[in-house]
Length: 143
Image (cartoon, rainbow, N blue to C red; front, top):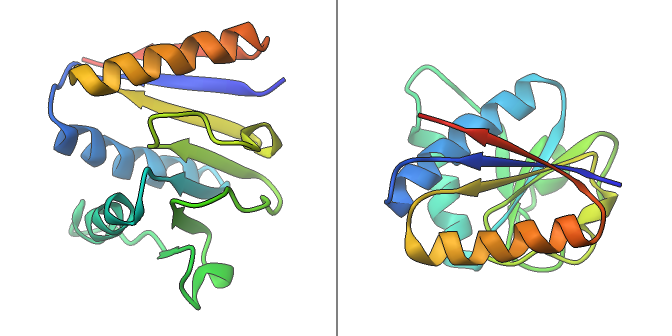
């Protein structure tokens, strides 16, 4: 069974959630994982792509949209369609409101909850579904 890490933020804005996703993506990559950020749609993937360029002036996280020519050559991809088949130790950062099909093929799964009502409702349902399927769900409450 997969380990699912839920990062619980106190912020209410979607921007704060995206900013944390960038920091978490960098941490996951620095730990040696490949990473796929799964987004709800192309617009969110493009917003996350731009945020990864700008979240820290002294950082560079090699990444590309999944439909880009560069996607096969970078360790971090962003997508909104069906999950790609993971290569090696690949983590999944799920920014989609629902659990994507095929998540169990990934080495680790991360979910981010903030206090935005839509996110809270969607991620509570995800939490319950993961638990019902027998996955280890680990909460990380962040100040």
